[in-house]
Amino acid sequence: MSEPNQENKARLELNIGHISMWLNRLCAVTESINRNNGFDTVKWSDWGGGDPNTDKLLAKIALMHEELSEAVTEVRKGTREACLEELADCVIRCMDTAQGLHAGVALEHSFGEILVRKLIKNCDRGYKHGKRC
Ligand SMILES: [Mg+2]
View 1 (cartoon, rainbow, N blue to C red):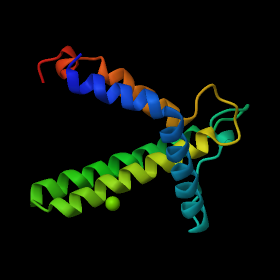
View 2: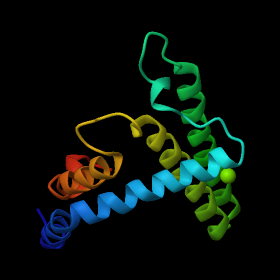
View 3: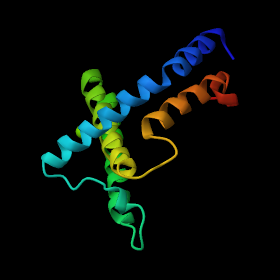
């Protein structure tokens, strides 16, 4: 592990509770804004139960893809700030869906904690995660 990533890992491990809490709060606010604007946001029951609403979940994930495609278009046009906006749109859609999947269910880890744990894991993955590119 590189020296800078040792520092990154230590910082993340030290603050995982705080960072996770704020990420989870941001997800909750994002879902609330979208729901208040009339969007049919994901609910925990869309995942489970006898009749999971997989079409709805797949549509939400497709919309995340759409935002990334819009970001690709902005890169091709050379419009940096517009590209950042599309990336933000994608993150907003991810947070909205993550909130719906995890609110109201006792999961072992919250979305915020899962995200921070993934970053900590990446600190140990090494140069290009062992791949060429
Ligand atoms: Mg967009």
